Structure formats: C-alpha cells, structure tokens
Image 1 (cartoon, helix red, strand yellow):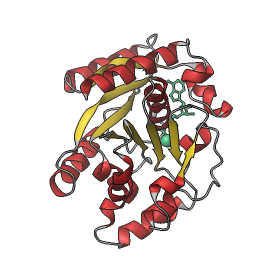
Image 2 (tube, rainbow, N blue to C red; image 1 turned 30 degrees about the vertical axis):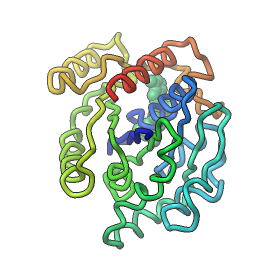
Image 3 (cartoon, protein in one colour; image 1 turned 135 degrees about the vertical axis):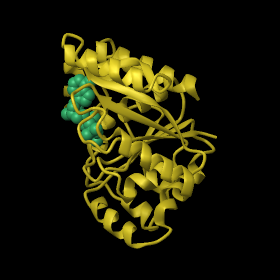
Length: 252
Ligand code: ADP
Ligand code: MG
C-alpha cells in the first residue's frame, strides 16, 4: 500500500509546492506509480506541472463528492506521475468544510481506493492550518515540513507541531513527521548557516541531511510547466531533490 505524504507548513513561500512537485517527480522517475494532489486553491503545483488550473473535475469536485478521485486524475508529462488538480473554486471548500462536522476525513476517504496500486501520494498543502490542511494531515501517513533558511523560519513551527499533535490525537494516530527539509539555502550567508544550525540543534532527528540550495533553475522551472529535475536534471537544485527523495524513501 502506498505511503501518503503531506507537504505542510502554514507559512507561504517556503518551498512546499517545489518540494511536493520535485519529490513526486523523483519517485515517479524511479519507476514507481506516483500521484500528486494539489490541495492549494492557488493551484501552483497544477500550473507548475503544465496543467491549466481551470481543469475540471478537480480536487474540489472530489471533496464535495461529485466524482471519485480516480476519475479526476490527469496524466502529466512525467511518466508514472498523475495529478489531482486544484481549481480556484477550492477556496470555497475551506469555508464549506469548516461548516460540516466530520468533514476532516473527506480526503482520506477519497484517496483510500487509490492506495493499493500507487507507491506514493503527495499532498501539496495551502499556507494555512485551515480545513484543507487538516484534511491533508488526516489523510497522510507522514508529513514533510519545508523550512526556509531565513530569520523567522522557526517561528510557526511550534504552531504546526501543536496542530500535528491535535490531528494525531483526534483524527489520525498513525501520522508521523518524516522530517524537516531546509530550503532556499544560500550557504554564502551567515544567516542561512545560523538557521541551519539552529534547526539541527532543536530537531536533531527530524532535520533531513539534504539541504535544498537557492537555485535559479528551481525558480524558473514552474514557468516551463515542469519539475526542475526535468528542466535541468544536473543542476544543484535537481541533485538536491534526488538526494532528498532517497532520504524520504529511506525513512519509510
Ligand atoms: P510554497 O508552496 O511554500 O508557497 P513555493 O514552492 O511555491 O513555496 O516556493 C516559493 C517561490 O520560491 C516560488 O516562486 C518557487 O519557484 C521559488 N523557490 C522555491 N524553492 C526555491 C529554491 N530552492 N531556489 C530558488 N527558488 C525557489
Ligand atoms: Mg505552494
């Protein structure tokens, strides 16, 4: 049965989507059936894989029970990687789900039939701890937390860990943190080195060894509608994502 990973951090712009798209692409590249679910109304993962965000049906239709997840999957340009697209309408789900008690398990229930013939399902979360992120954390086995190596990096992590504890207690006892991945790291700056040291001191077990460098190729790849590992497979950013995907797999 495939593992479901939520890529979560309530801060925006920390590298969630980039990590979700590229780790998913690396797993697919290894020949394993992989699904990326875009759980963010901004639909950056969808567009970053070259699929229009007006595509229907989308994850929104799945969450409201209009179609099955299997019927909403679309292929991507990467063999082995299928996508459940986000749509701007998904913003409404944050309000609709909040009104309905028990709706935290919608995504988990919708993805259950896909797990048997899929090695990995990655959930790209929105930058909040609202109902969509709670749905993703309830569906997930593991959480990958991208942490941008900048000054306020650790701020907010406590809130995220509190939310994870609540989800573990009330909704998903099997949820575990796969790890924290440092992103957009610029080794030339003292700040980045300090933040890395601080994260490793606070979370020695949780921080992945692999650090994702700040890399121009990573930044430009979404505009070509493809993961950086396809845009420029040998750049420093791609090499880091291949290493990270191996570490994620090794942690189980
Ligand atoms: P989030 O999903 O957490 O909001 P993104 O993955 O969308 O964050 O990243 C925010 C922005 O930074 C995007 O424009 C993305 O292309 C860029 N970016 C992400 N990681 C890197 C990196 N390692 N080097 C350079 N740019 C990056
Ligand atoms: Mg994003």
